[in-house]
Image 1 (cartoon, rainbow, N blue to C red):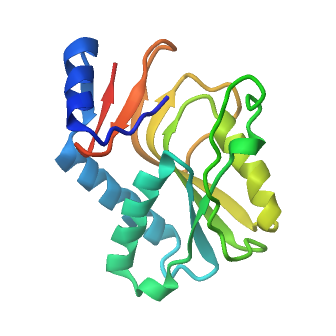
Image 2 (spheres, one colour; image 1 turned 90 degrees about the horizontal axis):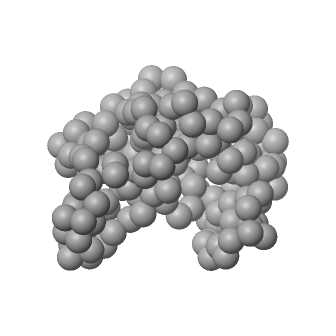
Image 3 (cartoon, rainbow, N blue to C red; image 1 turned 135 degrees about the horizontal axis):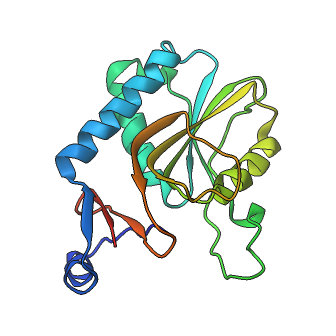
Length: 188
């Protein structure tokens, strides 16, 4: 579970009451985002036939920053970027109330190399839902996964990332949170 806090008082409350451990501080997060963007560019150097898709809602913070870093390295018009909402493709949609977000994909992924970007990889169920949702926009040539934090050893599905910001070992009861206003990632 990842939660974005926009209120510093809420962040302070969580730090004080839950004993949050910083996984990536602001400088480390900036370097990690830059590294991930460079790794994507190494494998897709001119971005020909490549599209980047951020996963709503929590992966957007990470994908926006990666896309911004890539646009600083290549001509901005070469970057094809969309946002995918997977709410109604989830296998737990009937057990929990999920608020739908907006899918912003104005292009076909037919025959394209797709880089899915999300914040935390945990069980793999969100990525499975994203793959199902992605088929509504065409059949991609290849799909790669870019993850800020990989919670290894917690997979329920055989999904592994192609690009990893940081791999951590956690137990099921632990949570990883991206604090957007503090620009850091914490665990409790």
